[in-house]
Image 1 (cartoon, rainbow, N blue to C red):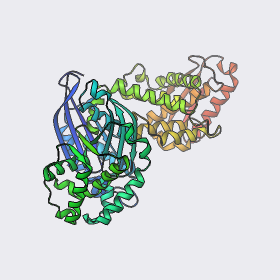
Image 2 (cartoon, rainbow, N blue to C red; image 1 turned 45 degrees about the horizontal axis):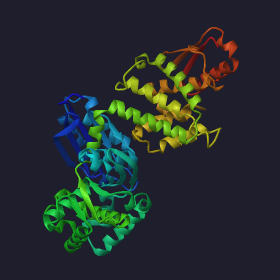
Image 3 (cartoon, one colour; image 1 turned 180 degrees about the vertical axis):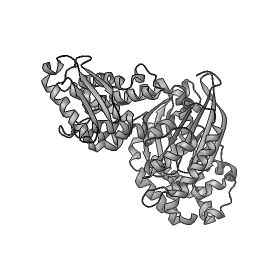
Image 4 (cartoon, helix red, strand yellow; image 1 turned 135 degrees about the horizontal axis):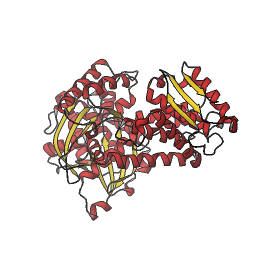
Length: 506
């Protein structure tokens, strides 16, 4: 990107919404503006894991203000990501529908490991780059409102990522109701946090890293308090400092009675839960001190925007390849289906031919190719129901580079590519999805014998509403009677859900 280009990242966290605007300067991003709103979306999850109307309204109002500030930005300059609260919320679609309108840009709900990867990118890019620092093995910890991310990495590469469902907002609500502090409450909160984080002990043991860094919210807040009130070194959290802070909170007895320099008012309601989780991390991983990192999730998003079209596409392609290899798919068959599906899709959506992946047609074609590459990921589990198992795998996999909605589209395409169509009928209201699914199903028919089909065997076009037209060339049906039979069966499948696949020459 050209120097001076503005980029913006929005982090819809469980406690705060943050907007970071930067300017590109010789491959680096310099902060131009930073806005933060304490929304406490995570406080708004009820016992049924639905966001309350009040919490959603706080989020919509904040995003509307962000949207006003982003007036004039192009879609390629902005990315908004949502984390644990919206991963959990059962009514997230209701929130996101209005949220995207308020902000004026799309919002990606990202999986936990993808959040962790982006956090590491933000931290690593904001640290010095030289031979010494690039050899440094790093542990990065980010304690958010409802999740804690841990990453092992070196230089700009994250080697291991994980997300745990424990955070400052959730633990404050559960273990410090009404903001009341006691030694017993802290002990119970730490034990509960260790129970969730216990599996991190072997993966993130202290012989696997040289320096521990803490990113964002809780850890930065604790460091600020220790520096301002206890005379600690700037940007450093120690075991002794954590003991000191817990003692001060217990003495205060409640959040509204805390009088500590460096503690912001908006952090008081969640400091107890955040401190308990941080103490659990220190104990489990035998951390003696943790440095506060300047980078965070939003910075990782910004730096990825610099090369989003190329590097992110490469990462997603690599992720697809890893998934296909892990589940033992037939690579040759996957490529045959991908090629055939692509040929059919560009007949249905001509704008997708040679289109950039910055455009919707280009992105749609790319997703179709990924779905074709993965359409048999469930075949090792069951030959008869492999499409159902494949859909489950994709719908429940944290895939590097992908957000939740993208994986849901791939999951639905894999689910719908075989068998009855009723199971994906709601998704067919989207015309693009319907075209993708038609292309994928026809490609599977053409490649059913696990050999490449004749190029141009079918001509496919859109008919009237809820109608596709498929024309078979020449004597193809006579030469491939089984394929012709499967095409006729396919036409019946669409007819059963109120669609029409008008078949000619077969």
